[in-house]
Amino acid sequence: MLYSFIVFIGVIGFLGLALWIMSVAVAPKNPHPVKEDTYECGLPAPEPIIASVNFQYYFYAIIFIAMDIAGVFFVLYSVGKGDPKFGWIFILFSLLLMVPLSYIMIGGNRR
Image (cartoon, rainbow, N blue to C red):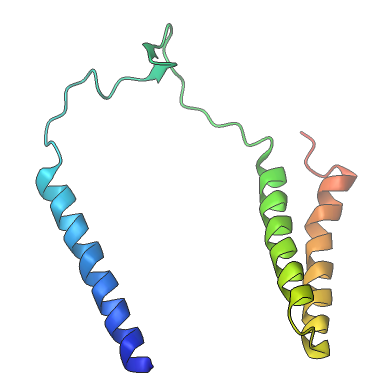
């Protein structure tokens, strides 16, 4: 069992290294400046693009991902045998998720 896992990791590592070497060998070294230009809906941008990122909804995205993962855990626990010792782990996990969720719901992300 362990031997097959080590062989699997070795094959995946070799394939990853081979693909990386092929991409370095085949990639263009000096691309045309038009290909590096910024486009909006397939057309050149009408005005210069300022590369700024708005982090207004960043916390909401993190909470969404955490709740999505929690949902998967809860479904797997409910479909499985439901061992009581794992139930305490899920209760602790859900309580830990309530801390950032309550921070967002109270309005801690206001600017």
